[in-house]
Length: 207
Image 1 (spheres, rainbow, N blue to C red):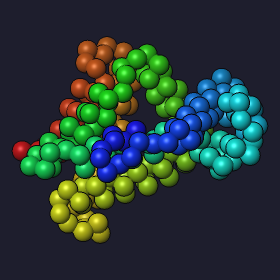
Image 2: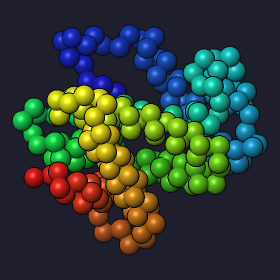
Image 3: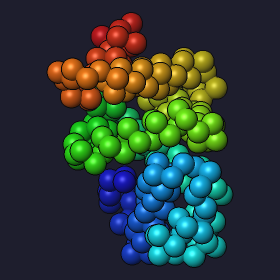
């Protein structure tokens, strides 16, 4: 969720309820698909489990795959917001590392969060439709991050450098998560592994 400032009014109760419904639908879709397999889950079942109608589900998501992958876009939106909020004088590379680190720190470090990530990764790896939706959202999210980088760097959105940096951030985080999840001897928290990967990828940028 974005922070509230004097120029950003608090979300209305209706908006908060819509956010909660969207999150519930995404969570339930993932849980059911993990338990049964994607092919054996129907949209009406997801809607019923969330206590809403199928029509309501369709107002939020065009498909069950979109519901499952939606949190990925939420993360990119938050990442762009955090980058824009970093101190103006902070070097770009450091701002990118701190932004992603803050994204992890701002979420509760619970077994539930880790379990969700694990379930989603397995499903995305085994279900082509989920992976395709995830990649579509990742592409859109990467462009969103590139826009925030361009703003911070004071260059145009069509410049190559912001796009390259955004791709480096996304790729480094993805590699770090994969490495951390596959490593049974985890001596460091996930956030530290991600930050180390980002620093390696951005070592020519981080000064």
